[in-house]
Image: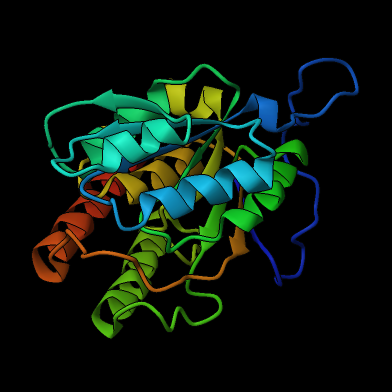
Amino acid sequence: MSQVHRAGDSGLERSVARPASSTGEGEEYTFEDVSVVMGTYNEEAAIGTVLADIERVTDGRAEVVCVDGSSDRTPEIAREHGARVIEQEPQGYGVAVRAAILAPERPVVVTTDCDDTYPMERLPEFLAGINAGYDVVSGDRLYHGADAMPTTNRLGNAAFALLASALMGERVHDTTTGMRAYRREVVESIEWTENTGLSAELLIRSLMRGYAVREIPIEYRERAGETKLDPFSGGAAIAKSILRAGIEERLR
């Protein structure tokens, strides 16, 4: 079974099952090998800030892909910042993010949200984790308490992590985070099925198939703009996704 390594845990720096893939002998991935992807839906209040942060942190070398179903100026602002925008009818979070993940061809894919809750300044650390040999590097929002997150969401996310951990037999701490880095072969090798619960599925199926995963603590900021997810119906959908993905992987 693969192991989840978490910053602050003993054994975090143990070697992983596979050496880091690279562009050549002795070379490491750079931001020119990175695509930062996101689903966007009416996020004109925050999208400009997020894309400006990505450009600043990566010196404009990372590709940005937005799969967009907005009715506001979100796609226009994204294009103004040099992002590749793929327009589609709104079909939910997972449909958009799945399309965004599979669209680019660069070897490292980083997912994030477009509401300015995630710290783009941590992108170098995510890339360093991939270069260290991890297949998935996952941002743990709950490590520092996630005080900016509504209490209902914070408790729900902690419960989702406990449920996933019980199903997998491996402790994870934040299954629903939107900020992760993946090797391209991970996202291309698995058939992703979930919508609202895609974030959890991306972690569960990767881990249960033996990929090396590292969780790193990240800060979580108050979102800019209005949330689109109802905490109760959305929470039920996420729990169902966790159960489905965990049971299916156990039966493989």
